[in-house]
Structures are given as structure tokens and as C-alpha cells.
Length: 439
Image 1 (tube, one colour):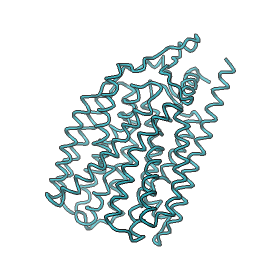
Image 2 (tube, rainbow, N blue to C red; image 1 turned 45 degrees about the vertical axis):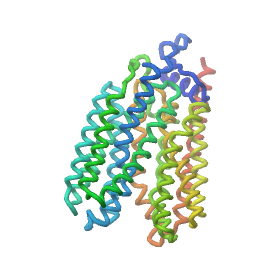
Image 3 (spheres, one colour; image 1 turned 180 degrees about the vertical axis):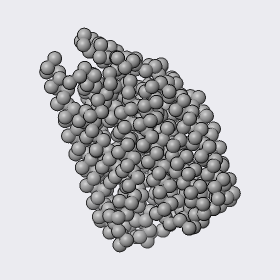
Image 4 (cartoon, rainbow, N blue to C red; image 1 turned 90 degrees about the horizontal axis):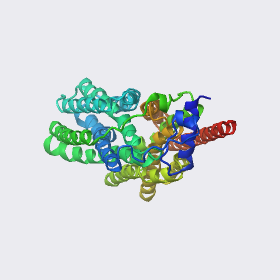
């Protein structure tokens, strides 16, 4: 095992043990048996939390376009793109999600190379130009909408998503779960605000004006967000070491994330159709879906506190197991009371599991010098599962809407995801013990 892997094991062990250490052992220091203590906040606590706020604003604006797509899809299918089926329209959001997560490799690597501010600026400009271009698209011109929203806005979101997570995390060595959870939650809150704005503005002022108003809000918050960010100094490669991407616990975590996202998205994509098929009131359905969205947002923040205190990998496993169990509550969600309970519980724990995925990656592979790369690569399988999740879920329940099949699908995949992560953690711990015994 290389010295850099030893460094990763030692640091990962500290993170998993849930310690409050803000220490990082450099390769050079480890060889001498001396702990090199990094400051709790490399550039100070004030700048660290201001940076978290800046990253929050960036995620709030960009990821919001993904999380509020239900409003867009309803309007596109019913009025703006009448010649396009719901399935065809769904490819717009599928492409945007694919680019959001898939471009994390590029955005993360550029951050590792020291181009963080340039990546944020480029992603913000592309996103805003594409957002304003969406307001200029013509009715029933599908290609214009998919180019502006699916491709253009997707590229902008993709360039900002991973850099926002990584930049916030680098300000909190060894205890980054809360910072990353706050940043990830921004997309859920932004999606709720965007949904309300667009729902209210389109009937009153029309689609172009509603989109421009939302884009202007994004312009202001993105400008403020970029100004608030402080990029901490990065450790040299020779000190931090290169992270091995074929490290077994890392690979298993990627598989776990892929399966968890593939199964976990089914209730989010189909809960409205599920409620409709059980003849619930339209207003109640809207509030139930809103409750799930806000529960997801809080779920992205609250467990992060316990992750930093008790260990991020263990907390992630617990949340994934509970989330798998919550999936089966959907069997009792055919009545209003059951639906609202399901939406709150499932939304909270699904948000917890998804928000802790990135901190788990950094706990197992904690090299500071190439953190953007390892997080970005980890997003690729999640991007694929996000793209295919909706059509696979639709194929499983079929035209006869066999909901039990989708529920079992979600529960089994979430449970399998948790089980794989347990194996990954045990292999990681065994590697730590073996290396410690050898020294």
C-alpha cells in the first residue's frame, strides 16, 4: 500500500470515528510519525461560513431549475409544447440532471488545478445566458427548449455543482458534513421558491416574463454568491498525495450510490401520479408533494450534524437503512393521512442519504489536493442512474400501475445500497488495522 493510501486510511479512520479532530497527516509528517495539525478553518471561521453562504446561493439558483422542473413539465405538456408527449418532455430534465452530475468530473478537476473562481464564473454565465434564452423560445419548438434548458442550463449547473460542494468542504478539514449538507439543501429550498414563483407568474404575466423574473433573481444571487466565496489555499500534491480511484471501498461506494439513486428516485418521480391514481384531492396532493420537498431539504442538513459528531459513513448507512424501510410505508399511503406521513418521512431520509453521499466519499478518500476529482468521478454513476431512473420506474409499474412493484423495487435497492456500504466500511477499517499493525 502506498504512503498516500496510508494517509487516506488514517484520516478516514478519524472521520469515521466521529472525532472532532481538524488534523490532517501529511505524507511527509506521517513518515516521521509526527501529526501535522491543520487549522480548524484554513482562512478563518468567518470566511469559512461566508463561503458556505456563497456556495448556498449558487446552488440555490442553479439546482433550483432541476428541482422545480415539475412546474415546467406541467406547463410544457399542457400548453407550451403541445406536440410533445410527457415522455419526450421528460428528456429535458433527464439531460439537465445528466449534465449537472456528469460534468462534476470536469468542474472538480478544474478546482483541483486552482481554477475555482473561473469555473464558478463560467458556469454562472452559461447558466444565466441559457436561462434568459429560455424566455425567448417559441411555442411548440421543442429543440429550442431542450437546447436552452436541457443543454445550456445543464452545463451551467454541472460546472457549479461539485465545485460548490468541494469549496465549502475545504474550509472544514475533517468535519465537512454540515457544510456540505447546508450547500446541498439549497437546491431543495430553491426548487420550492422557483416553483412558487413560476406557478404564480405564468398565469399573470405569461411564460417569457415569468422566466425572465426568475432569471433576474438568479442573476442577483449568483453575483453575490461568487463575491462571497473565498478559495482556501490548496496543499501541494507532494504533501497530500494522489488518491487511488480503484481503492475498493471507494468503488463499492460508487456502486452503492448508483443503486440508491436508481431506486430512491422512484417515489419522488411518481408520488403525484400515485396520489392521482388513488383519487386524492388535487390541492392535498400539491401540499403533500411540497411537504416532501421541504422534508428533503431539512433532511439534507439535520443528519449532517450527527455525521460530523458520530461518523459520516455510519450515519449514512443508518439513514439509507431507514430510507429503505420508509419506502414500504408507501403501501399505506393510499389514504391522505398515510400519504402525508410517507412524504415527510421518506423525503427526510432520502434527503439525508443523498446529502451524506459526498461526505462519505471525502471520508474514505480524504486527499485535499484532488478532492474535486474524487467527488466529481463519484457523481458520474449517480448521473446515469438519475437519467434512467424515471423510465425504469415507469417500466416496472407498467401501464396497469402495479405500485407494489415500484415500492419493492425502491426498498430492495435502497437496502442493497446500505448493505454494500457496510461492506465498504468494513474493508476500509480492515485496511486501517492491517496498515497500523504493519507499522
